[in-house]
Amino acid sequence: MKKTKTIVLISGKGSNLLNIINNVNSGFINMEILMVISNNFKANGLDIAKNHDIPTLTIENNDEFEKKLSGVIDDNAIDLVVLAGFMKILPENITKKYDGMILNIHPSLLPKHKGLNTHRKVIEGRDKFHGASVHYVTSKLDDGPVIIQARYEVDNYDEDLIKKKIHDIEHQIFPIAIKWFVDGNIYKYKNKFTFNNEVLECPIEHILNH
Ligand code: GAR
Image 1 (cartoon, rainbow, N blue to C red):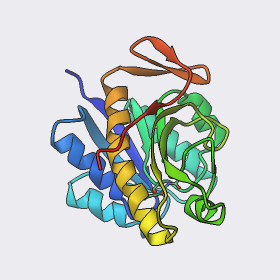
Image 2 (image 1 turned 120 degrees about the horizontal axis):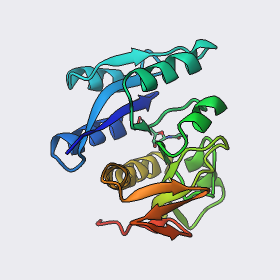
Image 3 (image 1 turned 180 degrees about the horizontal axis):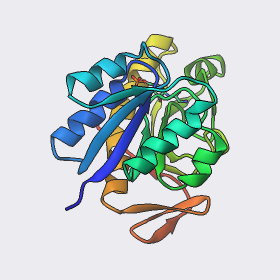
């Protein structure tokens, strides 16, 4: 079966990237990561990519960004763009042109806590539940249809512990959503998505296995 041609965009540590690579290597996700792109030349995720022999590219946050990114996507006939801790808002021309083929992981139970500092917002609000979401990217920030979410009851408001827990959740749900995309189970449909040809009105809730 043809492998889905994918690029992964990162800005930092790259733990989601590593987890995705491991899921590709284990055969769980049938795709090929053609390139890892960062807007931060110091991102640790670039080293992870290099260690796995995946070509890397750093694109600066300037006017050339949009042209360079769409150049990579078009020249390589990319099927899927994965945002794995990518901290730059994509230009509208990109989100419109590649509508339905960009997935993002976000560290909150969307639509709650869009944007940055989600853990801090949970701590300040003493939220009872926290979690992570995978969604299709649209031109409105963190607003596209949410595919999958997982939640936990917050029992400790220490930011480091929350961050660790959320990473753990992300590492469970992101590969599942990517696999669904790659296997053709999900498609973006207007501001919703279909799962096995049925329009879903709300995200799929993933029950955590620990
Ligand atoms: C993840 O928690 C991801 O949800 C978040 O950045 C972290 C990256 O971690 N993304 C955003 O906040 C996007 N708005 P990683 O580099 O270890 O994968």
